[in-house]
Length: 332
Image (cartoon, rainbow, N blue to C red; front, side, top):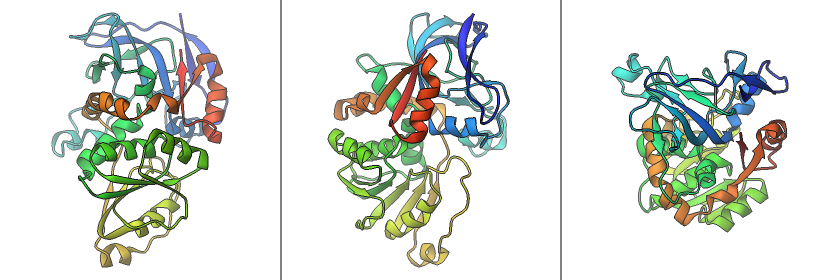
């Protein structure tokens, strides 16, 4: 038997259960997670803000060692990361629009498939799996395990960042820091607007961002403003931060947190381009892992991470909810 953290009721405490060790399907893998990330989405799942089947093993972020392989190119003992979801390849977004993140039948680990908060996870055929590069600290890789590929999607496909342009990032959580770090790698000058002060101070220490400002501070308008705050009110604020002819990229509104007021005349009069970006695909994870050597050479990403044993999952969730840690990971 194996152990897993299970959500059995919305708003109820999670519990550790004994579950059977899965077998690898034809074309798939069983991985023993060494690290399983906790994301803000997991808090939303616990609260019932996304419709998911119960009971459910949570955890859509992970890195671990192959326990059993029936997938070509992978062997027992390989250290891997895997995409949190896989597209069906048959629906209109997959075939006509070539937008797998909009797949109507997307299967996501820790959302509608058993996730990584467990001793073992079964990866289905078609899941994008990538071997970790030599010399990359797995803890550093986990710091942006979901936020990193999410921002690769946003900044490479939805609204690519350009060399020399000014960027404002709203939010100093993992998604915001991923946006800032990747924009810097792309040659932009980045201002992070967010809080609490401790997060801005850590970003400054690590060199993530070029300037840092509290929420509500007066900052110069930017060519590109990236919303990573997850608060609806940030959208109206962010639109006002973009220069005339600039762009606004919304990434942080992953769950429906409600409505907000904006003045659409400002979008037209100032000729703003507005983009949304949803999650990431396997290709974006591959690109994130490819960029990890450059990211970890420039930024000490491991300092973003606080690790907890699987038995301390409740404390970890409480710390994330209270903002006491920046990135929490479980160590099954």
